[in-house]
Image (tube, rainbow, N blue to C red; front, side, top):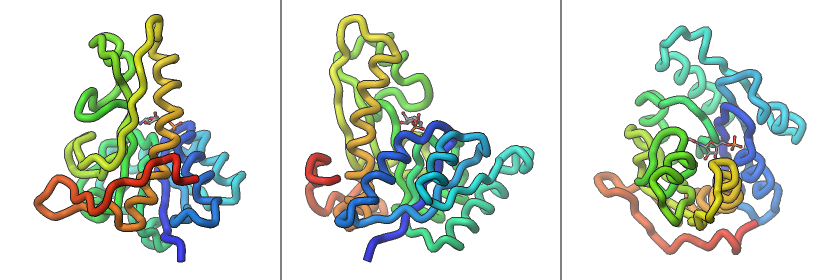
Length: 213
Ligand code: GAR
């Protein structure tokens, strides 16, 4: 039986689409049962709804800065949907312990850099400014530190002469779309798991993205 996952977004939702696409494959071990956004206007919500996936907005603004109460409401929706895993896919809110503790070991995030390099925002601009020759993306388990959790998957791309943040970001995004479905499958299958007190327990080598839909 497929495991049940939700995706949290704030905007465009291209990583969400890559997860939905993978989940359509009969052999993929996860089904996406809910897409949730803190922004009702997020384009990804309409995309999810058009694909027949329950799509829900829980706007953070009416909570007037009470982040814990906002997350408790999200948590209730995740519980109602009997979600087992949560994927942050361009979810642009810092999380409080309400969500981080509830989903320890069961929540992934995708970040557009090769962590631990360039946590935070504007990663492609910062990579170009730093003059790195290799850039990329990371899927990691979510812990309380921002962009700090144990790394599940990474993909690297070259930085090419003449690159702009846009051209580099587009090259990275293609790789994001490959590694996120692979990382979620690995977590759902128990190939990777958070080991208490350890950084990450890699129980088996991570299957290559190419082997997954
Ligand atoms: C992606 O590049 C993702 O890695 C990044 O936001 C973009 C969302 O695009 N996430 C972060 O920067 C989180 N720190 P998408 O909505 O098309 O998936």
